[in-house]
Length: 170
Image 1: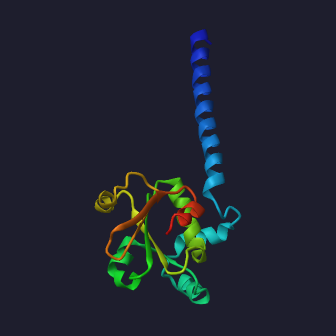
Image 2 (image 1 turned 60 degrees about the horizontal axis):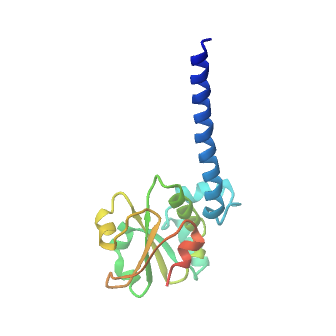
């Protein structure tokens, strides 16, 4: 084989190793800060992905554990916003392609009891809810915006873990 071909192959392999190493290191760093429920079983993860917050399983869980908040979509909130008057309301600007967002969503859906009582987390699609993003000056996914009954912002923060997301609620 020609020497220049060997050098080219070596460079390609080296670049591939650097890229894989970069993603491996970043993935490990994110795993430490993203997952508060890293020991959850695959079955509960699969169940949380296939059931909606208003499914019979989750409603039954809500009846058994009264001291919990809710996790809903913008559409669900807009169709029944009066239900949440006097509740703490928090938009979660979530992107389907964002691993941090997916992890936080999975944690919330798998254990609604971690959401404080009288609090509703409203999942807003980062890519589709452009006017809502503009209204609150949101520029990155995994941003949380707490607002009052008049729609005025109370607090805004970004969080890369469920604990940090919940910690920003006032």
